[in-house]
Image (cartoon, rainbow, N blue to C red; front, top):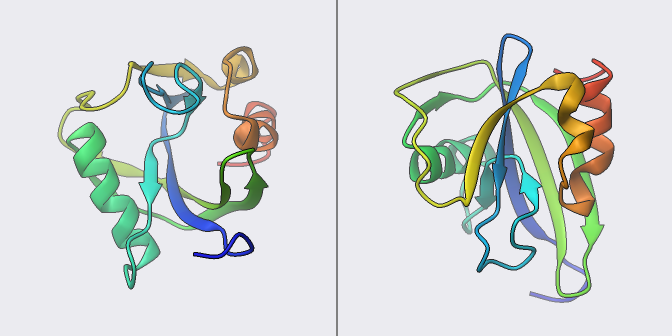
Length: 134
C-alpha cells in the first residue's frame, strides 16, 4: 500500500437514547487508552457495511444493523494514513460484550468532548455532541 493510499476503516455510531457507545483502545495498542468508535480495517474486496458488521461482531459480540453513512474523513497520523467511514447503527441484537478494548462506555452525547478521542475523530465527536449528526 503506497503512502498516498489511505487504510480504509469503518466505524459505527451506536446510539441508545441520549447515549453513544464509545470504546477505549487497549493500553498496549498504538494510541492506547484513547477513545474511538468501534470498527476496524476493511479487508480487500469487502463491502463497507459488511466490514462493520464483522468488526462489531468480533469486538462487541453483537449482530448490528448497519444504517447509512454519516461521516467520512481522511487523517494522517505520524505512522499511518487512514480513511474512516462512519455509519449509523440504529439497532443490534445481543448484549454488548467488550472483547478487545480497555473499556466500553455508554457516554452521554453532550459529554463526548470530555473523552480523549483519537485525533481523527474529534470533529465528528463535536458534531455528535452538538446534535448535528446521528
